[in-house]
Length: 146
Image (cartoon, rainbow, N blue to C red; front, side, top):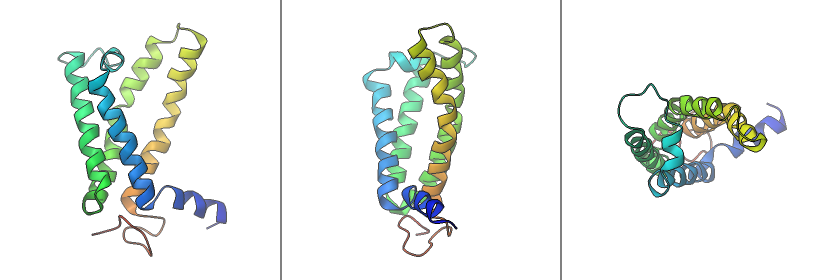
């Protein structure tokens, strides 16, 4: 492994990385309840039920996953759940990009810029789950197999 790849792996694993990921998830989850309208607007039209139901459900899921990632005992499951959550909300990002395709240049940049960012988020969640480049419970890795 090259030194650069080693630094990248270290940056996305361990307790600090897990807590940052947990904070990101918790912050976004709380926003779903504090300011739900922007989230309602990007719920894909084909989903059954009201957009607010999906906004609340995804906010609750983000809060639950944040808690699982934060706790070392549940971090492996939490990392896997975070990867699944990031995958599950991708259609909302696609919906946002589609809806904003004729919006201002800034909105288009935001909407289309979010699409490729989902892959690194999924990778980060999986790295937190694995505990590091040596797999679960690797040397000196917090959040490995408990």
